[in-house]
View 1: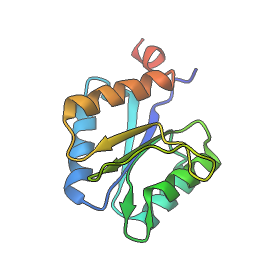
View 2 (view 1 turned 180 degrees about the vertical axis):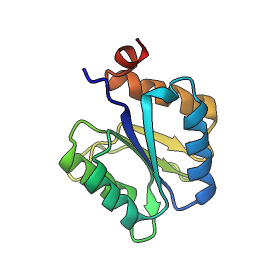
View 3 (view 1 turned 90 degrees about the horizontal axis):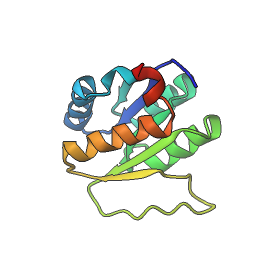
Length: 135
């Protein structure tokens, strides 16, 4: 188990959503567990993934220049144990088939922050950092 913060990348081309999620992650109960990076573009997010190798990717499914599933696939190639969350304003069914990267969770926009808080706690717990970093 690691004492390092969980590297979390939030990607959405809607600046308001990026700011709202980033602000929320600063005040959530488990905020001390995360190091948050944000991006508003596919190309920027792809570069961040390549350099940062985040533990968590929370991304909109549709982005100009590419999609969230492409970002998820790139992240899985370099960090197979990463936690991937897809966001969309549309109904989306997680299809973890051979041709798609594994998706761990789905957030339908607009989402309630109590659901997002539950998801953040689940992520920390599943990455085995909640008990280690809370001590």
